Image (tube, rainbow, N blue to C red; front, side, top):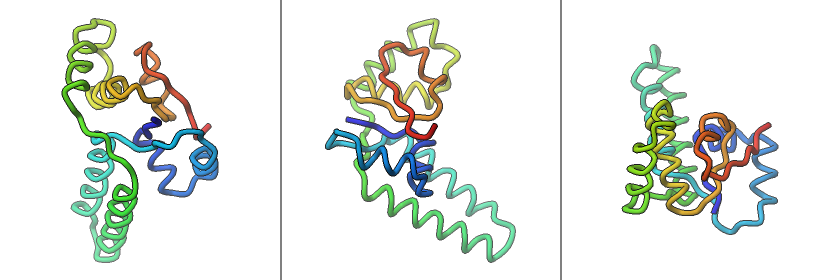
Amino acid sequence: MHLLDTDTLTHLHAGHPRVVNHLRDVDDPVVGTTVITKGELLRGRIEFLLKAPKGADLLRAQQWLTRTEDLLAQILVVPFDENAAREFDRLRANQAYRKIGRADLLIASIVLANQAILVTRNVRHFRQIHAVQIVNWVD
């Protein structure tokens, strides 16, 4: 299983050629994302909608939100389950991981619980967590 991080899913949504090609060529029948990434994307789109200063900006924000919802409806969204909760507790107990952001720890927990490969451009955010397998489809 390959799970796309927020940055990679955003690039896929924008049609980034490297991400599209990797997705087409990956030898894995299961490609999705995490519920954390879903939340990050939707939160960003809704914030854009709430802060849009003019009508035209509001319409564009609504279009982006709708497109993002459509994209998310087409892919597997892996939830946070009991196995991920155990991984999260294990990671949080390790002093070396205390400086890693909460969202990244939550994503890493889901990746580890599902023995998945994380597809991210933010390799340095996750490289400290040695058990997480990481690939970068953007660079």
